[in-house]
Amino acid sequence: MTNTEWSTKDKEYIKNKIRDIQDFPQPGILFRDITTLLKDSQAFEFLISKLYMRYKEYNIDCIAGIEARGFILGAALAAKLQKGFIPIRKKGKLPATTISEKYALEYGFSEVEIHLDAFESKKNSKVLLIDDLIATGGTAEASIHLIQSAQGECVEACFLLNLKNFTGLDKIKQLTPVFTVLDIE
Image 1: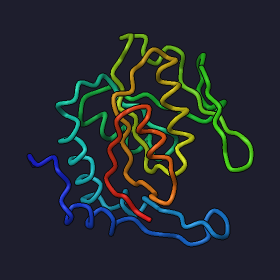
Image 2: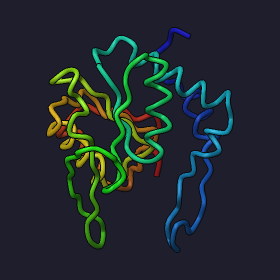
Image 3: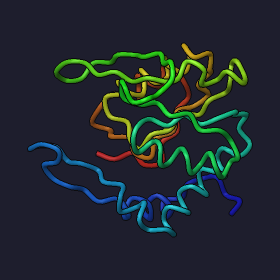
Image 4: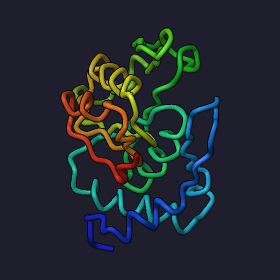
């Protein structure tokens, strides 16, 4: 595989592997479930291979994934690229000294953390941030700030899905370049 561009056929293939679940986790929400993509070994390998082709020539030192689905995509891509993986987790889940960043939810706040020494081996590490989807952008924005606070540089944010009905993508584009595989309603 040498083509780094995503054809309409490539995008449809991936889109058809993601199922929609109505009213989850609460009434009125349409949940985009990537577990159907992950359990299909050929589709998952196709996705990671296409992302590998995109990022193999990027000057990145590691990949940071946002809990939890960003862990799956990020760790698989990091292994294929032979780069380190940095987890960005919900508050209280990392065992060593952390730094945290709060972000607004529709009602209230949440918080994500990263290890203080995440980029200790190389200050100003070039970091690719990855997650399954972008909607309002709060978690991704907080994650980019965490990467910066830990002395890393977010060189791009990658999302499998961009939910176009939300404004998160525009918010993140003001902080770092962004790549999305699928833009969906």
